[in-house]
Length: 166
Image (cartoon, rainbow, N blue to C red):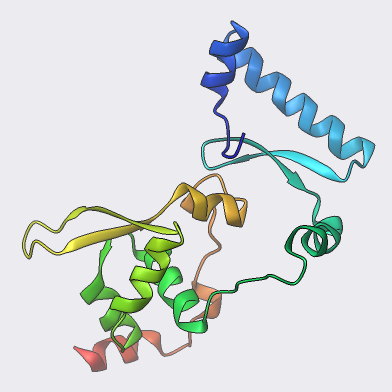
């Protein structure tokens, strides 16, 4: 499959209770880890998926990408972080947080499937954006709740800075 498969889908296909499928997947994942396979089975984006074990990732990347790596720009990474931590969020709010216009960067992130529209803000009618399941897959997360906390990366005087801009 090219996307994570949910326990419910697997349970329906296998005609087994979802609880049994979930427990079996946990056992399989633990077995792969214990055996030291080059891949691991883990939860991601609401389902299960096989991933290359981190210690082998550089070898697989070299084989698959063969020098064709496309990276996100610093502006795209910053914008993606704002969306991830503030979602759902409007373009104007992202621009205000970053201090620069983000329209082009948002278009790029949408075209790469990392960000999507998810409705409109009731007051202004502006489009709201959120991260996609592809974003979760790329980071190997099951939900955005698993993102690391921001507090350790913020300056000590962040409250004073926020008050000064109001």
